[in-house]
Length: 289
Length: 285
Image 1 (tube, rainbow over the protein chains, first blue to last red):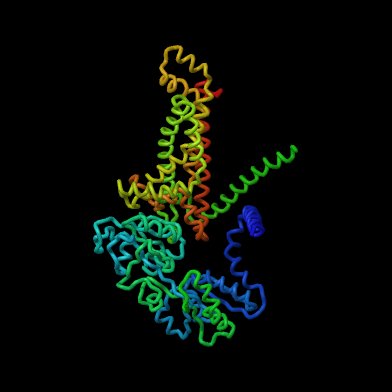
Image 2 (image 1 turned 60 degrees about the horizontal axis):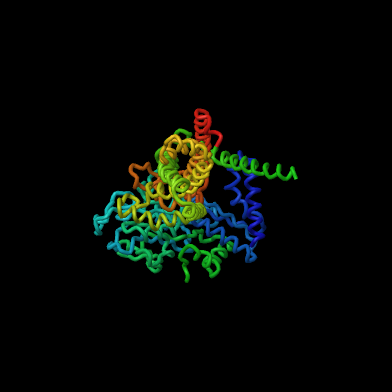
């Protein structure tokens, strides 16, 4: 442990010097590093392209897959869901990653989808709050600052204190995407006076301590300090998220052509197998329990 | 032996240089995206929409530091006077121990205490858009955090005033309070100012405690109970997930903070120097 810590610090110090020394070029090297890293060993090349959300567990999955003795050359690129699905349809990528449900025209393009996990976001309020159910539109309006008092949605006469995660957080990104809290420039439309809490724990603590507050956290983090709100009458529970009835949720999907190479198929089988699902369960709701 | 001392001193300089260079090189490319005027005076901070204006944070950092310094100076100097001139030395020892303890408390503890005690009180008294998480809470916590520095520095400089001054003043018929305010404080001025400079530096740079109590909304505060975000909080909150131009924007924020602190230090040192020149005798202390 100590040795590891030391090497971490040494690497950091070295990195700092290198970074400072060749700062002119360093901004290009940082992102490309992760892409080429996978392309060193032999075996068959499998390109996996798409959602940045799925990229993160996918890199862990690839590392585990390699650890288990597979020599396939996994190339992972995070370029966004739409681009990933398109690449899979075009055949420019073997596997496309998506963090949203496929649109009808995408489904019609002759591809196979495999759901590898679900991501559900619960809207939470203080336990003393009388409001138990909101519509998706009401949640959107609250977060955009159009509804500012709890009495407008059937609660007490109190100003709503909106709590959000920091910009860049995956949960915030998903929440904004699902509730369309983004304008045409992809800028967040969440009300500027919203209290920003850094991390899920801080959101829970803020909501638990402020009576008139509303916040959102991943479904897996719910506990009794806050009260989850039903959306359109559906509670944020694992079964409802899997069934798709709880609407502030999204599936993480891999898409392939039906005649994809056997090695890619084997990797997908690994992901929906026990080992892969264990990795997915770290942050998301696995397909299998 | 001499070499070792030289080396130690050199390491310090090297680290500072690398840190400065790292921040500058990390932040400079950002100005290819947003020009410096839009960055400093822009009122919108919306990283997903690539709008990077730090004006709200700049203003908040300045408000917070000024507010905390005013409270810190009034309370701190009064406390130091009481410690040095009024209380019996036994009681002073207890007070001194308490102040040392205050100085040793980690900032996250201040923040946590602020979040669980001060924020709900502010919420109950005045409410506000952040339900207590506000500029006022940040100022309050910051002023407590800079108190030990100001008290200590003031105390030391007051004690360093030669006893002859006191004897002379009292001998000429000055009352105790006339002596304290007209003679002692004047003679101890440069030490007190140094304490205030250190306090300002701490208030401006404090991050953890402020994140916990201020609400972190990137808006220009219109009232004391609005939730606000300081420059330091802006970097700390978003660094974890930031990438690309967003990360560069945070480095650029660090650059602004760096320059701001150097500027304040420089201006205050100049101010102290010119004040010393005006009253020649005070400079000896």
